[in-house]
Image (cartoon, rainbow, N blue to C red):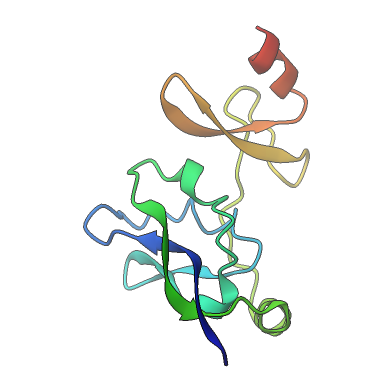
Length: 127
């Protein structure tokens, strides 16, 4: 275990409502809902990429630079293999397709954090 200064997700407990929308975008499985709030369960699982930030409707997630365990792909693999797939499937806000049918990505539209599928994305960009 190596500690170093790096970027990592920070969750503001006062703002977090426990909706769980931030769990699915975290491919590493670093975020889980525990005791009704989102939590980074182990620093070594968070790569600091921040894909979870854009989907939080409350703005409870930020990236901070601090002393933390170094990110470990090996720890991520062990964690992902050992957990049960409990995720909230995301749906495109335009057509309703789920991520199991069509790839979806986080976006912002009219000031909201939403998901859009790859079929609807061009229309969103080009109008």
